[in-house]
Length: 321
Ligand SMILES: Nc1ncnc2c1ncn2[C@@H]1O[C@H](COP(=O)(O)OP(=O)(O)O)[C@@H](O)[C@H]1O
Ligand SMILES: [Mg+2]
Image 1 (spheres, rainbow, N blue to C red):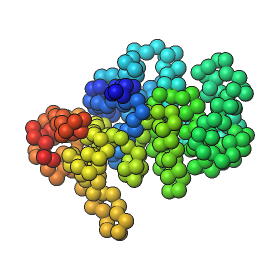
Image 2: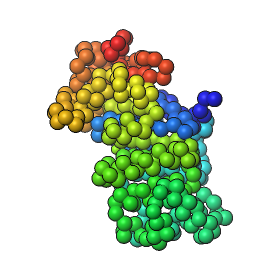
Image 3: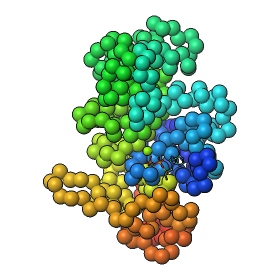
């Protein structure tokens, strides 16, 4: 059976209030139940903007065109109260800094209680604690009691990020959005968090959207990969296809920029990412090995490589062929 489409993003354009430039352009993405999608791309390519477009926190980003649909319901048309209910229960979020989701000086068990209470007024302190313990055990915390009694200010950054993931998982969201949840942590803790996220998918069938710049994480976790540049998804497809047979010149450059273990210096992507992306044409054209003059003015064309592997390029014929 085909997995259900939990989230459907179509022709999405967004901007930040007060900013003139469009931050996301014509983004197309479908998240299916039980699947892990990784979003990669250099900093400034629009990954966090995508995260905020799905989360729809008040005042963050403004949808100017297109839609984000959760189980068929357009978020833009949703009353504020329903959006609040959806956040946490339908769509959970883990931020880059655990401080964004945790209060440093409130006991963690209290924070679990409040999170669960927000979605179920009948939850008792005791029930909340049982639930918190169950989640912490599922995530293989060795001493859930100690954690629940502690305040985040008493724990390490890595431990707090693991707690933030557990807290986001407490209401059992259908989708978990993670914006670079491992980037501030050391390698051992990063690996532990990757294991935990994979366990969540195994245990709860959670659909995960993970923003990361760590290709090792992508190679281990992703079912699908979305590559962003200039506020667009420029390539999308199954992990194997995107990592081993990338079709977009930008994805190829990204792959060549990965440091190797044998100490060879990676090539790096030529040129510099501009601060503001052009409204017209391909944003990557000035840095692209294969671009021609028209690329800077032409519209983007979606090329299907095979199945659901596609790439966006202004050329009539995909240059990667
Ligand atoms: N709060 C904001 N106000 C205005 N522009 C923003 C804001 N946050 C990000 N941007 C712009 O949106 C673009 C994408 O940024 P972002 O989504 O944070 O990239 P990434 O997460 O991939 O590093 C950048 O050009 C950035 O300057
Ligand atoms: Mg970001």
